[in-house]
Image (tube, rainbow, N blue to C red):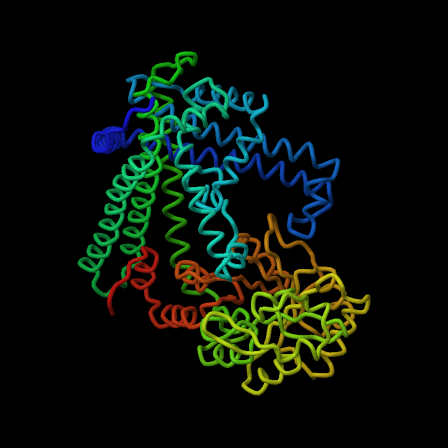
Length: 594
């Protein structure tokens, strides 16, 4: 069991197996995606909506998660949801791995066998291994989007606002990088646990131990095999993209033929998607071959049958239907951008690439970079005055291990703060607003209750708001919905917003004027519905090129970002270069020199 894995032999076998069985893998995998998209998500959505109905909530978020998840009526549904999710994961892995193992053994495993296996695995989990299984998946979050491993979990990852806050300090960055390295090693050693779970009748904990034994001398070999195989497939994606551009430019140099561009785009995106799918399958081919070579599989206990031709035709028909629908959706999504919204760009805490966050210098830097608004944070001091600061404790920026709520305005005002290579001082709310007003920069003011505020907290803010004569070109928001709804009730002339870090479901009927949703929880249909009911929707904190490209052409009303100049550049590029050909190239993620 400790023998070394032959690197190049395994690579050749994987690519050969993938090539010889490409159509079968593609057909069955697409049908699997179709089944999970329709029935799997349908089942999970039904259970989730049942939980919301029982608890009288419109969504699940930070503010109500205890109400939704821990109420007596919803606990059975929560357990049912986790069981259904686990079953769908096992069904997906069973189908993929049975399919691969069948090519190695020269036999065919029916879909019925895969489903029977999934039920068997679920029974094993209930026999004392349920917590181990979920811990295994949860520890994947810092190192990979689980959606890269399974269709049922399209976007399960750690939200950017969490990792962003952790890595704002050197110590936090080192901690997070150390955690990622440790988890990468642990999961590299236990990477065979899921295939072993499918191919053997061992409990999950024992499969993790077996995986560690198999990978004892082979971690770097496995990583090299994966890198080479994925590299070959990535090159194919690049060739498809370049070839698609070359074809369009040859047949339609002006880029004005909508039908041609749409057709080539749909085909190119589908081919890219197919190769990404093959990358996932290639990973399982490597793992399945290792398990087979070590004579660990015990699938003889499951029935297998000859493939029935008419069933194969049904699977093919559904797969083609799913592919056609995906192609049409891709085309419509791409060319819908002609009438897309033009979101405002909001500097997150000013412009942290050019100044300390929440500093007066940051307002000016954001203005110069082209921001339409600046988001900032205010805290209440011990003597009930407002200062501009995000952290409850001053240690990160001011090097002072004290809480703002324990200090007076005079003690906090003017304290030196430092971030990266920039220096500044802590301003009062009044100083910050006047500086912004002087240069014509509207603010998005975030109220950050720390828990020690007096009962008249909202009244104190309203009084300061009126004292400074802040007009409605500025907005006010908070993570605390109760505070915002009280503010809306007492001062409806103020534009109020609810900040939502994590949310599943629609926006509900919060008594506010706009919503601010984190990238993790973005749902386009929910955004459109909110806008139909008169609510603006902003998204935060969007910092990567890919995410900015996405949201510049989305229906959101505003983008909160640390990368103000980059966001403006992308937005201007989209406005200037918005022909059919430009949108075609952006969709393919092809960078060309102008």
